[in-house]
Length: 510
Image (cartoon, rainbow, N blue to C red; front, side):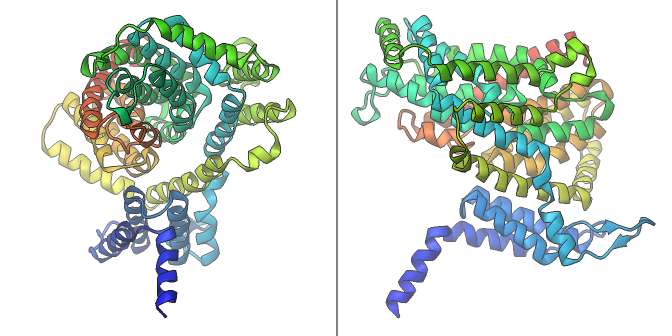
């Protein structure tokens, strides 16, 4: 019997972390026990309880995000917690079991989710061909005579790769981080030897803080951005319509300024002991020699990279008219098909892209829950009450603007997933802003919230998938990580608020 109990215990712990799993269950029960507001139905309140429990499980890492999402989908279907369908006369129909599971799985037809999934697969081509690695070493060979120059080389490489790598974890953790570590080790900077401050700590911090900024610059630079775009377009209406190209245009100048300042600010916050690195250029050149001449696959990858950027930026439509507009998801499918027929990737590799299929699964579940909260009227109920509170405070539009952005931004201390955070809070905050901020400031507010959805990743060592990879390398202590992250959050917010406001005014957006 003891062996059986031990086996059951081991199997449970293999798939669940007991404490956060219990907290998730408790949060589910507590929400259900709280008397629901009169304005909301019982199924709406049950949907909220499932969503809260899912977010708690994700934050506490009760299990993998995929397992939590599967459980959430099951609960939605079991409790029939989806919003009622309407008949031809507009009357609500009772939710059947079939309706519930169809609604629970409906988001998997969302084109934006497939855009991210396919683009993650495409980013595999950059890693496999070693094009990203070559690009990083090339910039270091040009700018690497000083430590600060190496920092700028890493930041530049991050920026150039961002449009085509929607997994910010793949970009910062799988492409840039190995380059950063090889440079640090070349200068005998190792955490295990206590020499991390020679150069490694500085490079690790630059490696990381380039990631949130580049993620804010392009729609396809991190997974949750299409969800942010969908929310902004839904709330902004005719005052602002975001596409791939408008996202890139609006974020270009504040993003470049923030990226330029970041290595310099970190240089003063975590000044490396080694500031002159004349050997770095020769080290990078040796690495490029090891890679050999540009391979056919790298040339093909460059060509496909360029084609995708042209199509995502709507260049054909600009030149030849709207009939040549290509949907961003269609563009991604074209890119993936080209990678397959050119032999850069094969179908078995596509099937083996665990992170892409995992993203499809959990991202679809969270999008479904957020959509159901909206259909149930919970988002509007929350935003209406939050709006009433803000109006009762008799605050000016600028102060309301700042409160909404900052509360949304710094609440990321409580989240280990940007997608979970955005799913839980973004739409409600956008709605409140649209109803409490004067019309002349609403477009800058929407754009600041767009940027905040990525920039908030700078705060903690669990803020996004990239952070535990770089933090786990041991070059930065937790105290330094949090302290410098807070300073960088202020710098980034100021840059986007000031430079962004001027740039958006020049573009005539408000």
